Length: 80
Image 1 (spheres, helix red, strand yellow):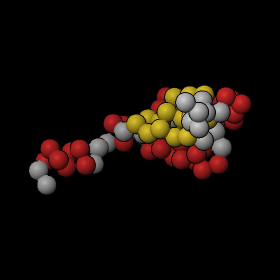
Image 2: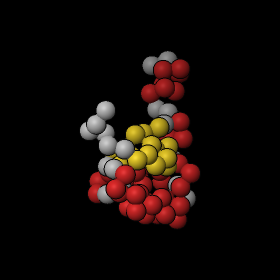
Image 3: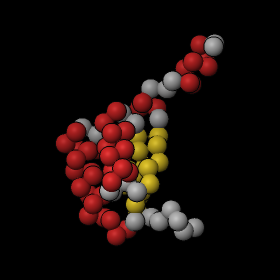
Image 4: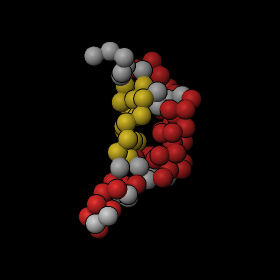
């Protein structure tokens, strides 16, 4: 593998953006927090009715040092 190809195959976590659905609860919450703690930027989406839970995710991320890496997005991915 050429050096340029290797660079793209294994990017630094800070250069990765993930979109996480169901980010306010359960596995989505755990993955959002884990990715942010690892340095990945996360667009974290969940239903507007989960606003309080999403605030909790952001509070935990702030305590873990990953608050600035999560962008909360209210929405329903099952609807256009």
